[in-house]
Length: 131
Image (cartoon, rainbow, N blue to C red; front, side, top):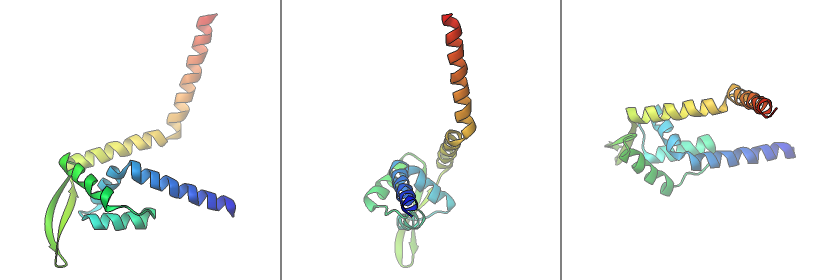
């Protein structure tokens, strides 16, 4: 039972670290699915990752992503309120795909195995040169 609790705590810590470090990618991914407003991003993050995302972290990042051209926004009247709806741009999709490909490459065991094999063969070459 204690091992499962440790795994659960570790998993939660990884999720918190991921959200803190990659908030921009998380937002782009959320907005890629469908145009949405900040409050929905906060609720989605809470339900998906079980982590509370603060307004003070989200809205400056939304503004930054929009300023860099990764998001665009429009104001819309919904449920009697004016909401700022965010939508991913083509540049945002390209950034998200680049990020995804990089992560996939880093997580691939073959990539790690090939690096280790390469290091091993370089070590053999160094030994041969010394003789």
